[in-house]
Length: 412
Image 1 (tube, rainbow, N blue to C red):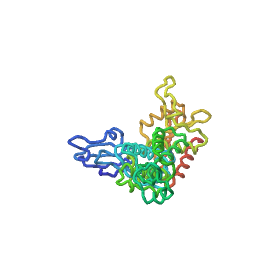
Image 2 (spheres, rainbow, N blue to C red):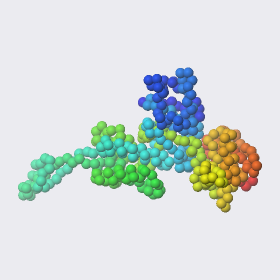
Image 3 (cartoon, rainbow, N blue to C red):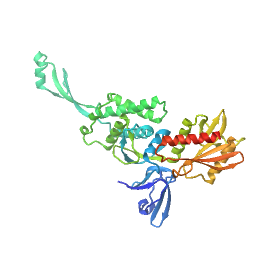
Image 4 (tube, rainbow, N blue to C red):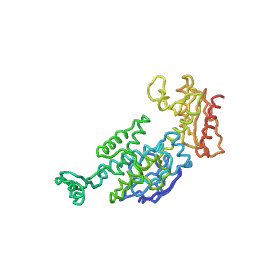
C-alpha cells in the first residue's frame, strides 16, 4: 500500500527525498508533473511540497500519495459542489477507497459512472460472471443424465417409453450480479437521457446494457440481499468493485469526501478549488441578483478585447448586463487578496467592456475581515473587493449577504 502524507491546502509539508527517488532518478508520475498540484522545492535531504489550488488524494508515484485537505469544512465543500454542479477531476493513475453517504450522487455521479464503466470494460475482458444451473427436461431426446426415478414416476408410468426425464447443466449469465449490473447501466442511461446530457458515457453504457441483454440477463431491479459473490467462488477484484459501484448507483448514494473507506474504489478524485469557487459564485449571483442578467464571461459574455481586432478575447468571470448594456464586471480570485497583475487584468476588461464598476470576489480570511472594501478608482472605473466566507456556518446566509452587498453597490 502507498504511504499517504496528510497536507492542507496552501500549507507546506516536508517528506524524505527518498520517497521520490528510484535508482537515482526522480520518480514522479507524468500526470502530476507540471500540472500545478504542488510547488516542489529541494531542501537538503528533504522535499518541500506546497499544495496549490487542488485538493484531494494526489498520487505522486506508486509508493506515495498526498491527501490534501481543503481549508473549508467538508460539509461546506460538498454543499458548494452540489450548488455549482461540481468541478471534479480524476487522476487515473491510482485508485482510492471511499465511503458512501445516504445523499444522492450529485456532482460526483459522473466520476462514479466513469469508474463503473471502466470496471465493466475490464470485466468484459476478464469474462462476465456466469454460473452453471441445473435444468430438468422431459422429452424424446436425452440431455445429460437420465433421471430413472423421475422417468418411472413420469412418462414411463404413462406408457411413454420413448420419453425420459433428464438433467443437465447450462452455463447462464442471468445471475443476480448481472441483473444488478444491467439495471445500473439502465439507471445511468435514463439519468443522462432525462437530463439531455451529451456524454461519451451514454454510448459505452448502451454497449454493456445491450451486451447483458443479448446474454439473456433480465432487466429488473434486483434485491440487494440476493446479490452475492460467494456462489462465483473467489470473486475477482473487478467483480467486487463493479458490484459495489452498481449498488451505490442504484441506491442513489454518494461518495463521501474526503477520502477514506472501502465501500467503493474510484480513481483519485481531485477538486480544482479555483474553478469551483468561480463557478459557485457565478451560480449564486445568477440566482440571487435578479436586477441584472448575469453572464459567464468565458462563454456567452465574452467579446474581443480590442475594438479593431478579433483576438485576443476579453473573458471576465462574470458580466452584469442591464437592457443589453454592461453595467459591471466580476472577477473571482481564489486567493487572499488580488495582486497587481489581477488589477491590470480587470482594468483592461473594464476598458474593453466600458464597464464603470468591477467587483473582485475573494475568500474571506476570517469573520472579522470587512466584506466590502474599495480597491481604488482609475478614471471612470471603480474597483471594489468583496469577501466571501467559505467556512461560514450557514452558506445560505453568506450567499444572501453577498447578493445584498452586490445589489447595494450597484444601487449606490
